[in-house]
Structure formats: structure tokens, C-alpha cells
Image 1: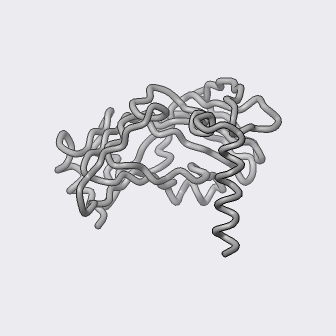
Image 2 (image 1 turned 90 degrees about the vertical axis):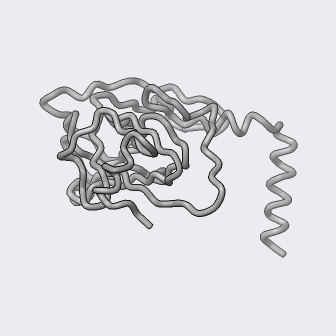
Length: 192
């Protein structure tokens, strides 16, 4: 079940926190989140999953900034959110999608207990001018059945800024030989 807009309002201060909150951003079954004025762009030609990547910070001026195709831009919401006992989900707004702007490449699924700003993986099909503060995406909430275990992460939980990929923290746990064995085991299972 997805919460209605009125139920989102009813859950504020209980299972949902949105700061800052503006009544006019509530939709029939979601809440619009806005684009912060900063973005990150990777400086690496090849991104390596096993290592942190260099990036540079861009400020979106009030007169807007043109996003270029074939460039990944990491941004964040202006709003800080907390969600307890519900599953938060993030989607781009249809008006944004109709401009050929992807708001999240793949990470629209949130976890119960997530607290922080949402990092947006933005990609433009063609050049498009964006502006800080535009209502760029919407958060909506699913109910959950069963015992709830809240999200805990040393990577992304309680973040304060845009977060580049920290997959390298997971991959560094095992050495290269163990990763090779895991890969061979997964391939053998897939072939059987």
C-alpha cells in the first residue's frame, strides 16, 4: 500500500520527517523534493568500483546551469528526510522526465529507517537547463509487513552532503582471491 498525501501529513513527526516541509509540495500520494544548489562531477575517465573516485563540486547559479549529455551529475535534495516503519521510494517528476532528465540512474529504492539527504544520480538525454530549488523528484511511502529492521550503514546513513559511490568500502572487505572464488562459485551456480 502507498500512503496518500493526507496520510503523509498525518505521519509527520511520527514515522516521517521532512525538513524543510512545505504544504504546497504535498501531492495526492507523494511529496515533491527540491534540488539543492550543489552538484558533484567525477573527474576520473574510468570509474573503479574498488577505489574512491576524484570529483569536483559545482554550484548551480540562480540563473541556471546547462547539464550536458553523457555526463553523470551527483546532486542532492534540499530536504532532509527520516522514515521509520515505512519504505521510502524516490521517483522523478513526470514534468522533469519529459525534458529527458533522469533524476536517479538506479537508486530510487530507500530502506526503512533511512535518515539523510537523498543523493540524486542525474543524467540528461540532451542539454537541459536546471535551476536550484526546482521540485525535481517525489518521495512516496509504502507500508511494510513483518518485523521491521531499520537500515544501518556506515556509508550513507545520516549523511550531510552529496555522496559519491562508496562501493569500494564493501569490495575492500574481501581480498582479491576471495572475490575470485566468490565469482567462480556464482558462475558455477548459474551454469548448473
